[in-house]
Amino acid sequence: MPHHPQPIDDLPPISTRSLSQLRQECQAQLDRFRRTHNRDVASRSCDEILRRAAAGDAAAFDVLWEISIPLVRSHCPPELLFAIDDVQQLVAERLIRKFRSRTSPYRAEGFAAYRTYLNLTLKSVCLNMQQRDPVCESLNRLHTTRRLEAVEPSTIRRVERLLMLQRCMALLPDDLHREVFRLRIVLQEEVETIVAELQPLAPGLTLREVYRLAERSIRLLRNMPEVREMLEIDGGKS
Image (cartoon, rainbow, N blue to C red; front, side, top):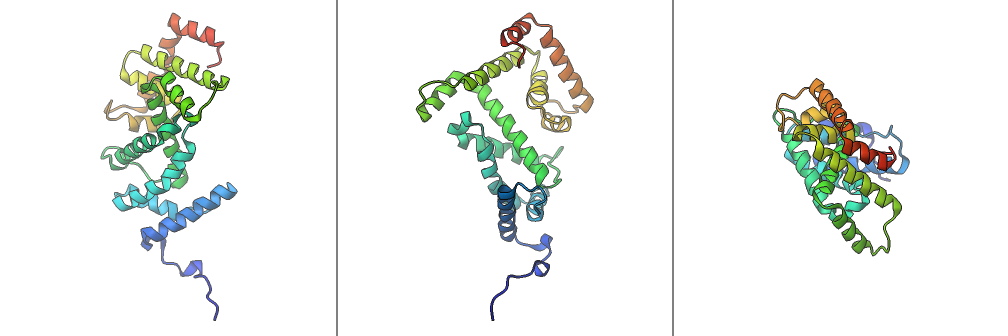
């Protein structure tokens, strides 16, 4: 007799399925989403992996990270692809700290929400790397790797904008102002996410305080002649 695939109704409850089975099912769900871009594609197996990882299951976190690596690689900015291994490591370290945090652990609200959080983490990591590494040196390495003859105008524009943001951050009075400015104004992260991320730097930080620090940072910068001059040169486009 011909073999028929096991009906979905005959599968064991999702909470009892092995990580190996969930991993295969989740990958199939991600592949379907990548092909169709249909947000209604089921992601129950991905959700279950995330739920177990958030509950402290180390093996589930390992599987979650394996699934996350292609997402990190595909969303990494082109100018940092030469350092993709470092990017991946830093993103992984942040996720581990968040999932293991005793005061503000990651709350599993579905895989779609996790992908948004992963992208925000990646953006934050990339901005930090670009700020630590001299921009011109990074571009020179990029051009050497790709053997480009000239810098594209759009690349020059991004470098100018990054340098201006770096200078604005340097003008702020302390690390807390700088981090709030970077996370809220530059990366436009949710205030709740900022409060959770800055707990090690400022225990007891509140939503209201984040709003206040962001507004004060903007007000301070607007009143600085150096910043006004940069904005005039920039044509007010930043």
